Image (cartoon, rainbow, N blue to C red; front, side, top):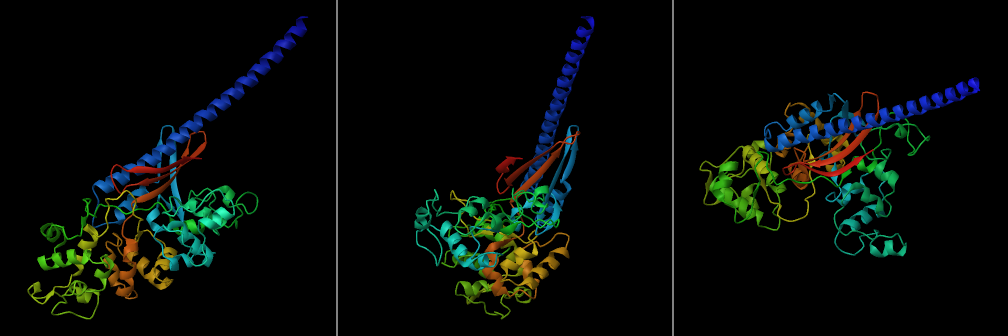
Length: 444
């Protein structure tokens, strides 16, 4: 009996030890996951703090300052763990968050530009345009409400701007493998299942390079900001604009200020033509000493001796143009809808730049060379007038798609606990107004 009692007691003690050990392991794992989660969240908050600082006190002469600071924040260590923030753009890995303004906004991209995307068919282009326009008329060989209702898909076109890039997958012909490529969870990072061939979804090349599909070219999240490069609200050019304020901020004279206000009220009142046509010509008052350079810096530096005359308006020089593009707008920001964002010349890759400039890789290479030659990068779209390969008339047509800073960022922060547990948090944040807003958030 004694021996049996000892044997039974031993079994009970061993079982208790086993349960206790497993409970301890599970507890340590749970604690590790909590530590990893808050480390990842700390990385998100660090990025948000940096974005808020640059929005409140921007360096107008150094657009690359925010890029450098965000790269510096890519990693950090706490007592309970560390974070790691990286992203892939056009096949290359970079430290820090992804500037979504390095991609084109799907709500403002043109039909011609859409057609240049890989694996993009003509009918899918038309279907994308049909999805985002307000009417029910089919464009070309696209698809409207009747198409989706006839196939009992359970949804119809929004007939309004896309809310997210995943919404693109609802469009006829826009298959997930085209939209996402190998980046199946759209975190802009190369995960293990995205680099293992056919072993797990999605199928990939197992080449150590992330194919981001159309999502690598497009975004629906980027937005324009009502703030100028100085950090103050932009001056909206209308007939009611205060000429004195406009003259003080941009350095234009009274005649030029009035001409800008008049041009903004015309049917063609957008900023782009200022880069290729003299201001006087735009309002029907050509300058007396007008030159034929049409936007080149050599012509922009010449102004009438008296600033302006009875027969014309002095041409804007490059410094005035830079101030106008930095601190003025012809866009109305008072409405409830977000304004589709522009492409940041300081973060866009060669493929996106090639897409913008009529499928000309030479122009993309020239822009990259220009921004890499200066520590501050490209400080204004006016700087592109220095690129000989870019025709001012072409630049004026794409000017409303270009900027030199980003307002919306995608952050993929991986938190790592001291025991090795990993949690990833993906957030999209908007700094176009203060405080910085989180407009998308998920934890993996």
